[in-house]
Length: 133
Image (cartoon, rainbow, N blue to C red):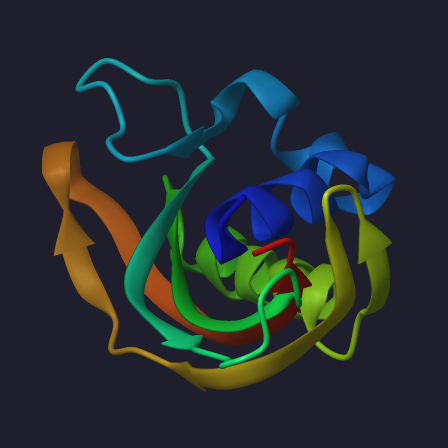
């Protein structure tokens, strides 16, 4: 499990997000060129593993996750950034096999032009969690 899996699960589970962006438009890795808008792309930016010398202990992971919002209007882009932040930032809990998950917001990127005259912006998260060693 990665922080991208965790953020993706939180987004798909949030009814406010999926009302605006259906679950089938929340993707990991790459958005298909013909995807309908609005859509969300969840990507792993970096991952740190805090290693332990105790065998069998859990390992603390810290992943930086980027969620790219792609929308057909600037207003939708701004609203989607707000919804993604509300769905993920400050979340605490467990999601098997990960435990002691904490999600912190880690900044918003610049507005950039997306493909096909779409509007894009990213919001980043710092996802910390334990996984079995």
